[in-house]
Amino acid sequence: MARYSIVTDLNRCVGCLACSVACKAVNGVPVGSFWNKTLRIGPNPKEGGSGQWPDVDLYFLTVSCQHCAEPACVNVCPTGASHKLADGTVQIDKSKCIGCQFCAMACPYGVRYLNEEERVVEKCTLCEQRVAQGELPQCVSQCGGMARWFGDLDEGIEAFRGARGETLGEFCEPFEDADVHALPDVGNVPEGRYILRRMAWKGGE
Image (cartoon, rainbow, N blue to C red):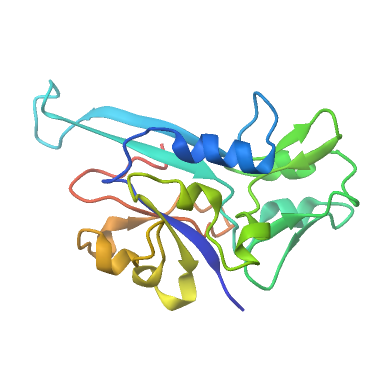
């Protein structure tokens, strides 16, 4: 069983929103809704610093479905519409979705929404239609900063692939285990990963 995921190198992300725009375009995401959001974290005072520019830290945090190992959204779905596949991704069977939004309320990251026109819940699918053909998720393939990488966590994040074909380990600045982070785990075990060097991780605040 695979554990497909996206790793974002936050030291490379410039907050250009290309990932959000590309996602909306390829997946037909309605106006006002997003499968992938980009948040600005900071500016925050550097540890032991004055807190005045340039003595501050700032980075951009992309947040989408974390395709959790123990997804709360799947546990509360009364129809089985929300389900987990063998590749580790969490998907929605729209033919079974009744629009109750229990899953949206259960998600700790606020990444699900109700499509008002179709009356079904939607979210990031990790571009399953592209991955099935050996392609990268659209947000990864369109990342001009080479900040987003896709792969199988069981193979190690150094093996994740980026838009130009390189692996994360070949292309990105070296990092330590302490530089690898995840969003807060409230029992759902998020599988998304973030690399942040030389700055304090504020992803859980």
